[in-house]
Length: 89
Image (cartoon, rainbow, N blue to C red; front, side):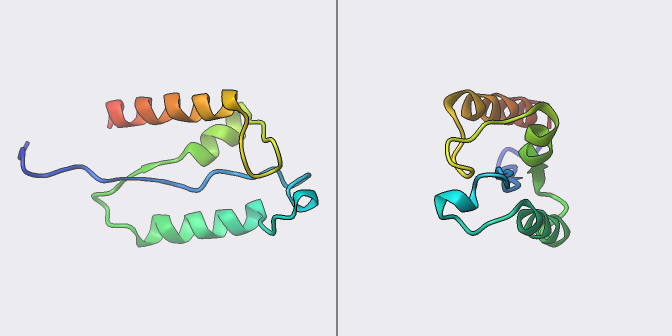
């Protein structure tokens, strides 16, 4: 491997809690996030490694404080998932 080349990672935007997010004044849906993430996947160079914490959270669960911001356990889970992705790419 060329030591002068760095690997670029892009983490997709994580999900929101559609059930409570609007009650807390945010105007964002998972449908909109999914569309954005799909455009990013299509538009990024093939050399960019994608970290799909969005699917990870939807599969294994997540909790938010207000529909947008996660609780401490979820943030820790995201951190651990990123470490695994970066190590295994």
